[in-house]
Length: 349
Image 1 (cartoon, rainbow, N blue to C red):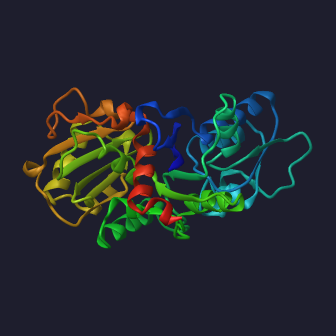
Image 2 (cartoon, rainbow, N blue to C red):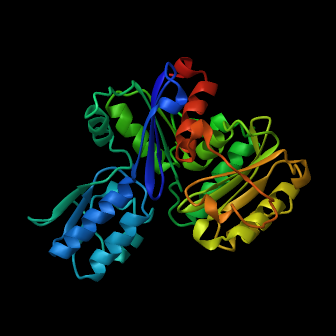
Image 3 (cartoon, one colour):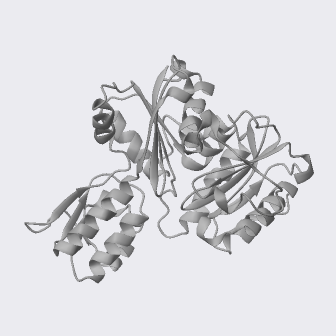
């Protein structure tokens, strides 16, 4: 089995070329800027040069690119975007227009044309190709998908989908899709692009992918609390018998060590409500089973902002810094590989 697993976050895309015939620690991998960061930098260069910008291509994550678009407009420069590209900035196109974006593909001559899309498979292939490394047949991609929810909070809508998966059983591998629900617009865009290239693929949300990958750390014991502290979002789940039995998701910028500990303890005890997380700027919380913090056999933390929980006092004691395959940065990528394996590998194609 050979898989290209790409975990695309707010700051980086973590790329693993997994081949089961090789030792995991010797697998080829790269940690590169995410596409939204790369596009934001190109918009900023266009602003310095005083040039208008046209965004065209599939829907992708916003974040850095949205902030760069606003800087461009504030500088008195025009930003044009096709409808699919504009949806990267907001699900409601009237709100995108309210930002000052001109929706359409009739940009003036001299505009800097930028291709949107979370996955730039051509660049990854070129990078590996420089070292004579061939691309595998199967591609797996994780993105953090807020979903398509014009007219209501995408935080709320996203978490409702997560809770529904838990109600249906919560197996970690079931958060991976060959055919993502239409609600998940980022996953659908990535999946469509790969299908157009006739590439066998599946997609997954970055949160469950990171949690599943962290469970591959040899120190993992169930029931376990796994916390992924990303650049943009923090997600914490209690895993028992391979199932997500409770979960909360919040924005990393709004959390410190003590706050994460308080939320995670309440999650384990079953006292954390969805409303309490949402009204404080997070996404939500859902509890199918209150395991109890005293019954946890391990607490693991992963993600590029994991230092927020490590090396200090909190209600979670001294968590393990998860490093599956010896590398924390590929936890999400390994979660993709493990989801593929648990879903039947080649039989799932």
